[in-house]
Amino acid sequence: MRPLIRLQRAWALVSVLSAAATVAGAAVLVPGPAQAASTLGAQAAASGRYFGTAVAAGKLGNSTYSTILDREFNMITPENEMKWDTTEPSRGSFNFGPADQIVSHAVAHGQRMRGHTLVWHSQLPGWVSSIGDANTLRSVMDNHITSEMTHFKGKIYAWDVVNEAFADGSTQHRSSVFQNVLGNGFIEEAFRTARAADSSAKLCYNDYNIENWSDAKTQGVYAMVKDFKSRGVPIDCVGFQSHFGSGGPPSSFPTTLSNFAALGVDVQLTELDIAQAPTTGYSNTVKACVNVSRCAGITVWGIRDSDSWRSGDNPLLFDGNGNKKSAYDAVLSALGGGVPYGDGGSTTPTPTPTPTPGDGGCSVTYTVSSQWSGGFGANVNVTNLGDPVSSWTLTWSFGAGQQVTQAWNVAVTQSGADVTAKSVSYNGSLGTGGSTSFGFNGSQNGSNPVPANFTLNGTACSAG
Ligand code: 9MR
Image (tube, rainbow, N blue to C red):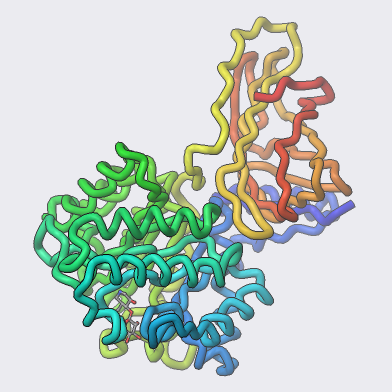
């Protein structure tokens, strides 16, 4: 029997469950509320999200830094090491060494990676900015994207394909060598090239000052994403950098995130920091994400205040000595709320038949909501087609060595391929035709078939 893995989003429920599990003598990986001792990464994972940080390769040898990194964060963005001036300092000559160091660290510590960034007007070597011929620049840009994405293929969860292409205070693109030589189409070209290079990485557009819904820049980016989606240009996510002043996010930030998500893209907070790290500002920012199901996760732009690009503002969650600040507690607590992450799923739900009490059985929709190298997230919706029940046990077997690693709204045990998922205190009661959902993260080895052999309280279900 594998150890019991339980993760709950509500502390009160955790308390009840922990007490129950203690009575049963089971191993419980969830801290009690008195400790509130989860980490940022674990707390985000409880709703299917990640919590990341920017990392500098040169700091990995600092033990205070790497101890916090590996304890708290399950997503890493290289702060500078994947940028063009480092990766292709002269034409066709690539240097992935510093970024490889970070990727190796992430692999060794089970962290995922965001790739930052492929096409950006800044930190761009002079040999690129001086190209004046469109054919040359197009081939240089495409080759850069393809070479870098191919090098890191299978190791990157999401790429910032294009960074900061819009002008401040405007709905239009900013001036850059890409814009000036290739015209408006360069962003589309970059995304199409990126999809061809690595079809499994999520492709993001990333920018700052697009958090306030009524800002012209926000509207410009929104119109671009809407246009891309309507024409089938491959874009999967929008990164909101979220570099805020001491007032925190604009009050319309939740609206902005849901409006973008409604276009059919994930939203991510990619470079969060807030001047003076106010608890309310941090809490409001995290809540804006976790209240939107398509908000996949949050990355802060550095670990300690001393690591920040704006260190004079003390904008991060740990002080210069690596101590947690009050903003840390605010973030941890806000991560416990909201709705589970879900990207709409990769399968079409099957309509549920109208049940009659006594018919028996159940219907299950199992959706792989996201997948990355070695891992995946899934949502399961179960409908009771039999008599009303006050608690339920759903079982299935994995077909390719998958293993549940973290689950929410359910208590999961796994023995070999066989998974047993039991209702928790607040979702056990299912009337005839009643449905409930739960989610989990798991590991997989490349093949991740959807299981088909579900049973509910011992009766076979039909898979949706
Ligand atoms: O934090 C990065 C800093 O170390 C670099 O000197 C700077 C160079 O432009 O880039 C910083 O990161 C930026 C990120 O790549 C894009 N969005 C704004 C970030 C802060 O400037």
